[in-house]
Amino acid sequence: MSTFNLILMKTKTRINLMTGCALSLILGAAAVGCTKAEVSGTDAEKSDTDTRIAFSTISRTAAYSLPGTDTLFEMDHDAVFAAQASLLIPTYVSGSEVNKLRNAILEEALGTGNGLDPQRDLDNYIKATVDSLGYPSPELVPDTVNVSDADGVLMLSGTVAGMSPRLLSYAVTTYFYPVHAANGSTDLGYVNYDFTSGKVLRLSDIFTEEGLKALPAVIAGQAKKTCPDAEITALPSRGSYYVDYEGRIVFVYQQGEVCYRAAGAVTASFYPQELSQYMTPEGRDALLTSF
Image (cartoon, rainbow, N blue to C red; front, side, top):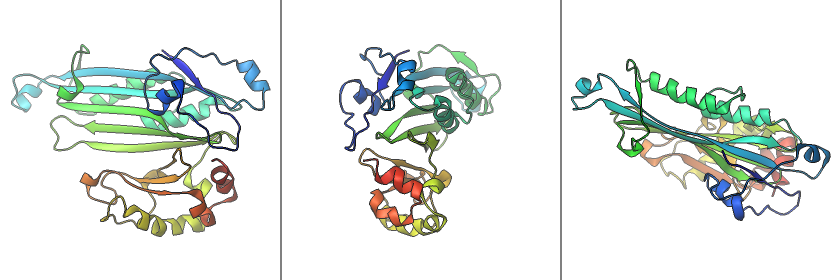
């Protein structure tokens, strides 16, 4: 398993990550061709300027035959359900306990957050998803099945959606297509982490109670640019948002949440200055000084 590091410098200007192995991380690639970089925990703990974060990649591709579905679906073979998953997992965060961030990511991606063995957790998640289909005794088959040819599919990815010296936004994308269903569904989830406080930032940390009440009306106008037919009267379910590489806070509504399903996810983006009047002191500190 390849391990690589992003070196974040404490500067007042926006960080430039579009070079070398960092580009692989931004694009969600598997760091192919990147050399292994070592992190000295002792030196890192002693340095006040060390703002490094290191990731490794866990992945799994699996296919299951579903006995008896040949008769059920009138096919000449049993249906096959395939799963493909790849997640960037933090292995080190300078000045903070890495398990807090790792557990938050695993909770968002897999519904579990113990963080002791992420690869095992991923394998168990895939098996549980297959079992949830309700077919008796699914049988694991060799990894020769092309996911695009399967009768049902689970695709899961976790990567970085945005990062600055202060904030990390991590995105989880899950696509689930049950066997021979009419349509699949895509779910988008996010974890937003403040390196300075070592805290996962939720909307209630960033915005005041009055601000949270006012935001839906503000978001509604901006969201019309993504989907003119969007009807927004509340904040995104699960408080979904991320901070992109331009420092904009992006509110994300799930597919079908506020607009017709074919429109996909509906988003609304704002520079922090546009929403500062609704923010808590913590929110202003984290967002207005990050970029």
